[in-house]
Length: 460
Ligand code: TRP
Image 1 (cartoon, rainbow, N blue to C red):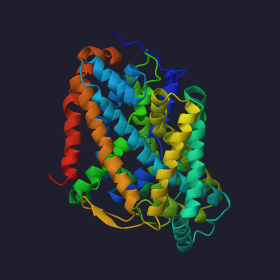
Image 2 (image 1 turned 90 degrees about the horizontal axis):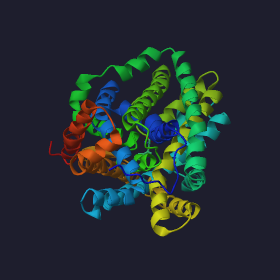
Image 3 (image 1 turned 90 degrees about the vertical axis):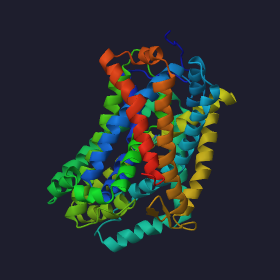
Image 4 (image 1 turned 120 degrees about the horizontal axis):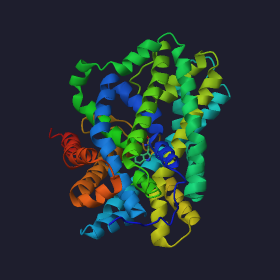
């Protein structure tokens, strides 16, 4: 039987609207801020290689599973999990998977918004020529001044949450879809301009090779850390494991092919991460900066480059603007599951639901703000040393634990619990493609995620 439900929240106006929105969710700070700094810390090409393997064996199959479950249930991830589980003859307690996703969404958006706030602050700094001269010490000082001032961080965090709430409150078609239709092409264009500039710098080839040539000796030395970072980042970057892609799938027409959409979204996401690193590392090498800088990479090293290059005000503003767009279209997907759940179960309007969700995210964000100043404390977790207490704990808890765990549950649910008839009914692919998907989702993906966990707790 084919489930012919409709979503009370609306539907995308076309297949492309879905692909743009899901790509908008996937492409975010993860691609332009997190990917380059992680790659920089983990030996460039080696990180990219492991990352691509994780996308292929876990990312794409789990994304397909999320879309198909979402489209079949056509409700918030919490209610969708409950309905589909009951329909397949299992306990309604699967709703807890949806609830964990909502919690993960709140945790991620709370810090995501703070970092996006730094980006907003840097749009203005770049535009007013604050980087001019490119004195490395002054620029590093500028960054630490910003993150050590909770009031300024709070102001930018507030603005970003309000931008996110403004879009989500307008609903699927006139909010989410309108935003991505304009922002995604703009983002891609701005990124190409940045890569174009990087091509004109002296050390372009070196920057590219840093990303393309895996340094296997470095990889062997700290394989565990590189692998953990790459696998956690695959979930984070593809927006998997917490219901964001599931809720976007619930607005998708029955006629659209899930397989080709998932392949397109994952390829676009990876392409943009690679392009971002092609825009960033040539500048890092040309201006003699440090690739293994950590989270400050684009806020400390790039402004030095912008301050020294011709047309730096223009390119700097462009860069932080494109990053704002990327963060914005991701943040909306992080709160959409919570908003739809509130609308369905709380019986309130979307506008109210969005306002409450935004308020909770805003309050949680204060913990991240303080972890860069008053509450900062260094700690070591799973062999990795971190400096910013709560921020790092939330980042590790979500990207390295909750998202892979959510992904594992989704793989098991769609591979082992859902009947062949219902998954085939959604995927509607040729037998050989279906068999490959089913094999990967039943065996490879769960084993992959389990290896990540055993690694995490130090057993492997
Ligand atoms: N994928 C986004 C990025 O790379 C962040 C994001 C949006 C996300 N929605 C998500 C991460 C859901 C995990 C789960 O920046």
